Structure formats: structure tokens, C-alpha cells
Image (tube, rainbow, N blue to C red; front, side):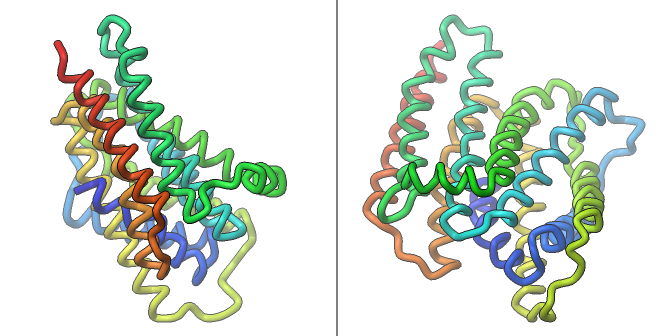
Length: 285
């Protein structure tokens, strides 16, 4: 459910950013999302949270959420938003390799590396669009506007660390409903510090509607993911997470009225193949 909900994130965040701007749109999304989580998924008392999880996990969560929302919003063109999304989608590969590295299995990283390479190549094809990823254009976009790419990369790394290590830190306590409002506070601080203010034109009903939809999508996804990493197999979840970029590209195409190309479907097959390879490796004792 988390992966399905997250698949709508890139497209809906882009629509909200067009109506409210990058910083205000992100702050509104996480404010509504935090309220929903506090209502429908009330957190445990703070005294029950291990300090390491509350501080370390909270900082990683806030940094990732802030960085990915701002990186998508700060992308200057549709092409660069696709490239930023691709950088963000390195987190499944990072998570697979990191989970293998801490699994204490002999040569675990080398065993999952082929599947990770195949799946990552599939992500590049699926997200790249009809003509594939133009590496020269991507390099020019990074040189012109490096901040969203840097934020996306650091955020992907932070999220892989969060997903792999915080289940042990948490001692069974889920901090999603505590961390999410902290993201909203951080984004409001960033918004006011940026001096962007309100958008020049009054946001439409559609823009407000997508704020609520995006809040439900993101908050609901993280509520499901928080439960999954506490009660499920981290290696299996990491492998399943490869579906996120493929589903996200498909959902974005539907939301933005774009046609899915042959490279997308070929990339989806590579993602599936890489996931199966890693699943077979993880299933071996």
C-alpha cells in the first residue's frame, strides 16, 4: 500500500507546486498530512520513544522529506523534474545494498549487486521517457541548477539509512506520526526564510484539492511503510521498493496526460527482472 500510494507523489507534488510554489506547497502538504496522522494514527507518548530513535530517526526523516519535496518543487523544467525524480529513486538500490551489507551474510553485497544493477537500469529507462535519459542535457541541467539534484541524492541516502537502521533503534515504536509534523515545521521555516510569500495569482480549487490529495497520499504511504519496516522483512521490502519508480512514472503520466513509451515498458521488465534476481538471492539460506 505504501508503494502504491507513493506512486502518485511525484505527479501530485508537481501540480501543487505549480499552484503554490515549491516551498509553500510543500509546507501545506505536510501540514495537512501531519494533522491527518495525528487524528487517525495517534503516536505513542514521547517518553516511550528510545532517545536514539527519536533524535536520529527524526532528523533523518525530516531531512529526507524536506529534501525530496523541495527538490521536486525547485526543478526548473519538466525534464529536470524527471531527472531529479530519477536521482531520488536511487534509494531502493541504496537500501538493497545497505540491507545486504548489514545482514552478516557472506558476500551478501556482491550477490545482490547484479540484480541491483539490472533494476536500476530499468528505472533509468522507465523514468527517462520516450527518448530515454539525455545524459548531456542532464549534465547541463545539473550545472545550471544543482541544488535539487544534490538534495535528491542526499535525501535518497538518508532515507536508505532510515529504513535499514531505525527498526532496531525504535524498539517497536512507530514515530511516523511524530516525525511528520516536524517536517511541516521545517518546511514552514524554509518557506518564510526564502521570502517567497504567497503566489502572484490566487490558487484555484484544483490546487487546494491536490494539496489534500497529496497529503493523503504521502502521509498514508508513510504510515503503511512505518508499520512495514517494523514488522516485515527489511530485505524483502527493499526489493519490493523497486516498484515505486515504475508505478510513480505510470501515475505521473496519467495525471499529466503523457503517453507511456516502449522504453518505459522495457524498463519495467528490467526492474521486475532485477527484483526477482534479488528475491532469489535473499531466499537462499
